[in-house]
Image 1 (cartoon, one colour):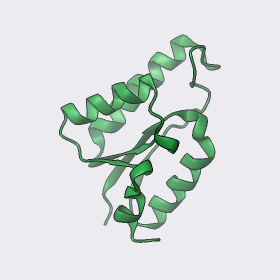
Image 2 (spheres, helix red, strand yellow):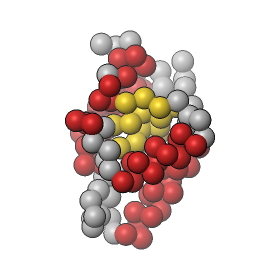
Image 3 (tube, helix red, strand yellow):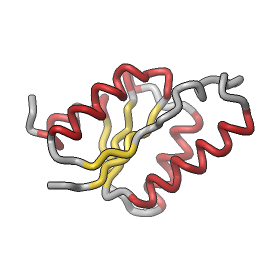
Image 4 (cartoon, one colour):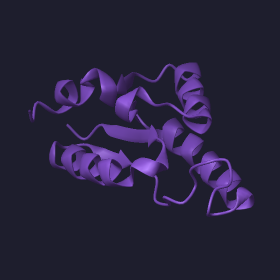
Length: 110
């Protein structure tokens, strides 16, 4: 398969991201995912200057991806994720959602 998938969503769901990274990798995807998990909230622990860099990196990962998977646990999409989602849609990237059960559609691992 070897499609490139970019995981986006709130970094407060680090454990879920890690699980999805592993599962998508085992299903044959090359996975882009956040590598820093201290950027959530109004006052990110990584600092505002670092969050700007990380948000830009997320857009670059989306640019290089074949599809985007939104890690929207309980349907939650924050402002940064919304911006990334808008960027993906602008680039006509196929978008899939954790909350809609799209993981199983993409992996056939259920």
